Amino acid sequence: MPTTDITLTHTNSVDEMTANSFTSTPATTGTLNATGTQELNVGATLNVAANQLAGSYTTSTGFDVTVNYN
Image 1 (cartoon, rainbow, N blue to C red):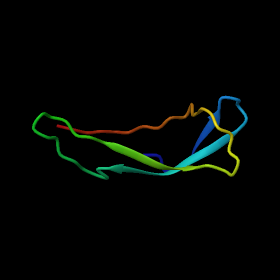
Image 2 (image 1 turned 45 degrees about the horizontal axis):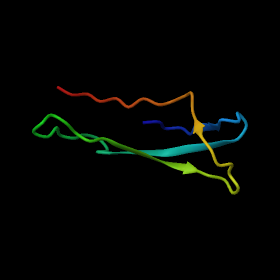
Image 3 (image 1 turned 180 degrees about the vertical axis):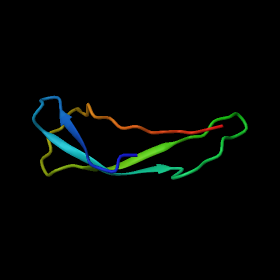
């Protein structure tokens, strides 16, 4: 999970906002169910400024989620 802010940029290439304080559930370890699956939820705080321009925001940075299983 990211430990630093992720910058999201509007399609106009000018306006930005950040996402931070990433969390996941399960937070550390989990267990596969009888069908061999486990749901992984990822969340973060999206910092939206007053009068933030509406629209699509993306990041070219992305972030990794690593899953180890046996």
